[in-house]
Image 1: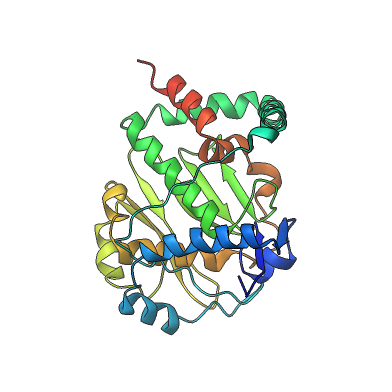
Image 2 (image 1 turned 135 degrees about the horizontal axis):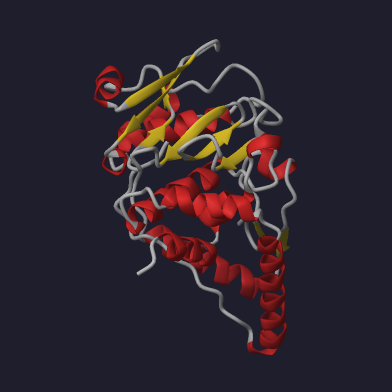
Length: 289
């Protein structure tokens, strides 16, 4: 907002968001609309809380990756005790019929897309999830996968992204570029893998405590992929979460296309993470009452 004008759009305020993706934005210059937007923003600002200085120091002092792709700042999760914000669509009664028609069209389009998903991958995903401890455990892991997608801005048709349930493996995983950044379920059904950067706090101790760990080599900086049987407890630690998201975001744009995309990407894993309706259907099948 500036003076009597406002600019609203879907793009993240990044080079890729503004210039590398299909986005929609609009400039508002009607006083009533600008005042409404300013009031809405002011209300959100009033219930926000200041960022922790330690978090800001970490963001400033953590250098971006230097190899390959666009130079990006690391992902840092800024802690906050502010009230979580939820949103709702307010319909103009004069436009209600058009809104309903648009919503119905979107649902039909999503249904058509889902109908094209691989039946083999669908069945394989359910079988894989049946190994997990319980429904809530799986639900939480798909929420973490969705968090990755939000942080990175990667969509299902982005060639850097692979969401898979490998036939020869025992895991559900997300790959960005050339590296697994997140995985869950295994032969025993209860581990979670997170990509972590070399040099993070307590890394040697974390690797010692892990059930298994893989070390990525051959790059300018080292990364690790430890597996934890208590992964959901680990991710509650903000230092751990920031390190995971930072290492994940560093992989974006390192490659234009993942070498695993053509043979391993399964859209159903992506949509299970992002579509609550499909996720519920998958979990109902994996954990029948």
